[in-house]
Amino acid sequence: MPSAQDMLFKTLADPTRRAIFERLCREGEQTVGALTARAGVSQPAVSKHLGVLKQAGLVRDRQEGRQTHYSAQLGALALLIDWTSQMTGFWQKRFDKLEDLLKRMDQ
Amino acid sequence: MIAAATETRSAVVEREFPHPPEKLWRALTQPHLIEEWLMKNDFKPVVGHSFNLRGDWGGVLDCKVLEVEPHKTLSYTWDFKHEDVAFNLKSVVTFTLTPTSAGTHLRVEQAGFRPDQKQAYGGAHAGWKQFFTKLDQVLARPD
Image (cartoon, rainbow over all chains, first blue to last red):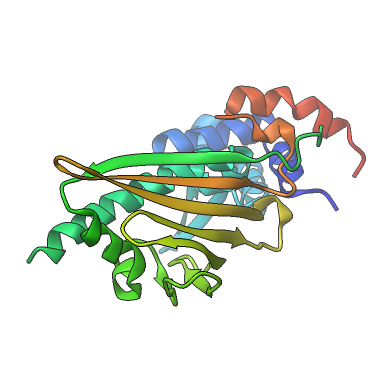
């Protein structure tokens, strides 16, 4: 069974798909139409790429009226990053909350 | 490529708080206070006590108290089991409190390893560059 990492690598190996994912990372949520306008490929092709990205957990879709909006799921890349840097960020945020709590405990 | 599969690493965060160690100790050891800054829990400051930390995201951490030295040191295991082994983590979290003129210096160290963490992905701050350096290898593998 291919690992989750293999799936991420394979999904992002396609340059068009990677360009779509990078745009979602940089510019935030977008519709298929907006992505197609600058992707240089047809809308069905963009939709297909988005489907593959979604399956890999790299994008999420949200229906609004007749439009589907796609956004990047950066958490999916977390397993490619050393866990210690993830946990360092985690503890820094928790220390912020601890600081707030300690202030409240004075009252 | 999996040579460093069980290599221990650690994350350290330190901060000085303008509050006495006794007060920080309460925030670190009383369940209703722990919940306010960390996670829901059934913690007890008793060596050997097993408990869970439950995250908002639905994840559950398996923990066991290793060391309790009031107002100074608190240590417990912090294990995360995930169906995808790439997310598994076995670690120990240690809080060290040191009184200072302005309050308390708090240090947290989390030491451990991901049983299946591969060296290629384990290098600090793996980014896009490293990501694509390894692409060829992965693509060359049979399905």
